[in-house]
Image (tube, rainbow, N blue to C red; front, side, top):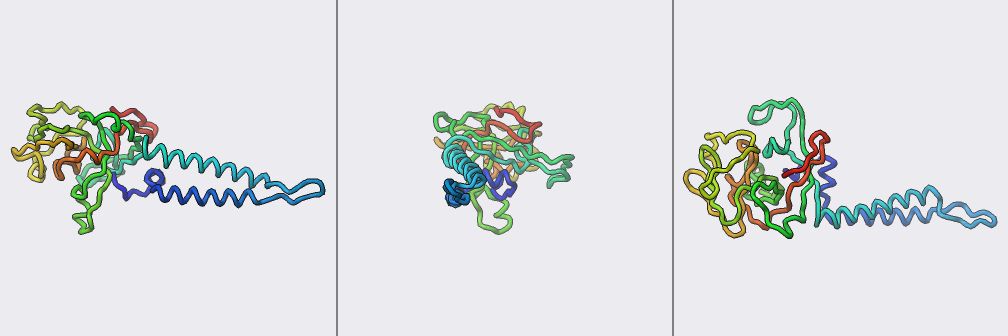
Length: 258
């Protein structure tokens, strides 16, 4: 997930509160102007708000109410829409373009899931293993800007929760082990490529990671194309935004996420 995506759905999903307030104020001013557009007074008939101006003003009023409800109440506290731009969570969440990708894999179609994220669920419960979570990653996870020599930023990412506070995680050639037990992972796209292991900074090379009281371990389902805890370490619990709950677009992929 990348904040640099600029599609219409992504722009709406990521509008800042200041922008929403500014738009609401502008619409309110426009509504007041429209309500001052009067019909011409006639003998015995006083001037009234022009019917067309009144109709548009009512539509604007509805937009203001809906916008405040969605952007200032629902989105900050309950549900938010997100866009999947990359292949890191495939096959669970698709995020590829038609053509050959950087790993030389050919895709016949373009597929980018749009999901709803439940931001309330972790306010009254703790994350569970295998949850698909959205979080604000630390700057150290911004590998792209680091390669380009740009200042690293805290991107919003989506991964699967593998390790919980107190767990011991280790990456071995035959899979992922948590507390010395190999995980059964039917959701992954393919087995990890052993040639990638020397690049892992955490959890591999016989050096297990012991998670602290507020630390989580996250990994992408596409293990060979995911920038996750193997490269930048444990995730602090406070960075979790919410749980991915539903794919709502495209229509042929609508389903509840477990």
